[in-house]
Length: 77
Image 1 (cartoon, rainbow, N blue to C red):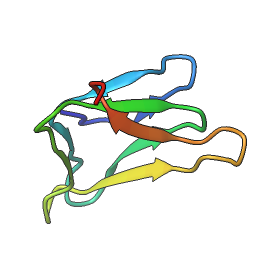
Image 2: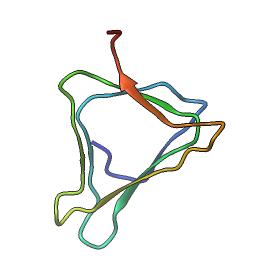
Image 3: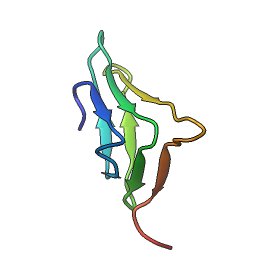
Image 4: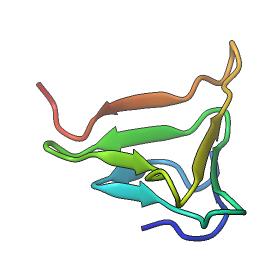
């Protein structure tokens, strides 16, 4: 669970995602920033929940032409 502003950096890439939850509070959202060039591998059966109506969450992910943000499966097909 992500409960404070977090940055996923290209230097720290690759990130393995399994059931990520992003929750702030009613007044101040929590922001997950995903930098250009980051790769996120998603585990089978996982989910990402961003906010829940009262607990606010934001994903800020903006890639570039040369440094795309990639979401892929964590396993080979």
